Amino acid sequence: MRELLTDLLGWWEVETPFALATVVATSASVPRRPGAVMAVNTAGEVLGNVSGGCVEGAVYDTARRVLTTGEPALETFGFSADDAFAVGLTCGGTISVFVQRIDPVTAPDFPAVAVAVAAAEPVAVATVIAGPARVGVRRGVWLDRVAGTFGTESLDAAVTEDARAMLVQGRSGQRHYGPAGERRCDTRRRDEWRCDTVTVFVQSFVPPARMLVFGAIDFARAVTRVGVFLGYHVTVCDARGVFATRRRFPEAHEVVVEWPHRYLKRTAVDPSTVICVLTHDPKFDVPLLEVALRTRAGYVGAMGSRRAHADRLTRLRDAGLTEVELARIRAPIGLDLGARTPEETAVSIAAEIIQNRRRGSGQPLSTTAGPIHRCGTGEQGIW
Image (cartoon, rainbow, N blue to C red; front, side, top):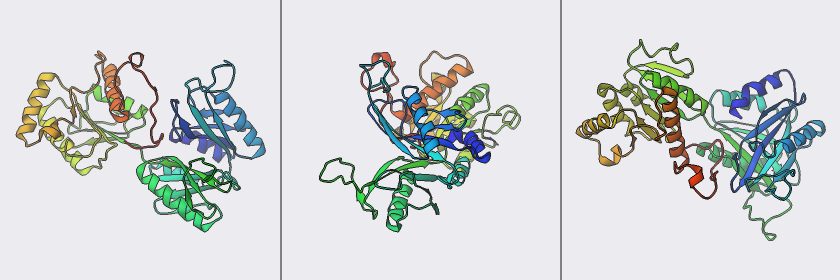
């Protein structure tokens, strides 16, 4: 939902109600994960998507109905092959979509949540999507406060505790409770599943993962653009102020003029952080990599020829780095796509980052077997 916020807040500010369709469960191979959203306003305008095109038409019709009636709806779509015109997922999976009307009465927490997401403040939205009553009721959960209630103190407490745990992990998903907040498993066995079970979908919004690009060169401009496109918070850093300028890197969220290794020592790095070393100069990249390889960054890539990288490894060994630490470097940076231009090189770097993050094989899909889309923790999950 992060990429739709500006438009959604625009609808809210001019008092235009809209229906928000959220993917709340998936199975097998599906294009989008839990947390993906599509919005439809009263004028019929559409933002986002929930399936890559397979069921958008049916979800649109449901959204229009929900806008009219105000009654939330939970719909599940599965594989459809016998009838080419039937609504279903040709990929063979299943997807459950919860649709609810968003206006000041049904979702009074929406602007506060939207502001938090825009400000990169962690927040989770817990919504009742199934149960004996109060379907559609929401509770905003921050690390230090809450907004909204399910009407039962014990249920509020249980959902808040679980939502905060999921928020810390960057996870979105369903949780199941008894009417007094008793936690239940979704086994669907008759002896354990009860008609009074309350199903809550928790959608976590964590700050965007960081991409740190070191070296204010032409390749860095292209990497910055693709990093922003992929949803990273991109920082460009170089010690040379004449090159590290806002004018040269207008897409970057931050442009820092400082020695790279000094900046990296003082900045926050976690397992979702991507570090791209494009400096091309031993006096910059060796001390920088010495710091980078001892952080928790999920990806550390360095540009340069194989000869330059061999020299770099020698210098790093002399600096005391172990073979285990050195094995973390992706160098030469990027996948072998035959890239030549800065833009092509940025695509090859982005491909390697995605492959590393999603644990893909890096092979052409035409030569592989099994699910195309692997199961994960959801759109908002961290590394």
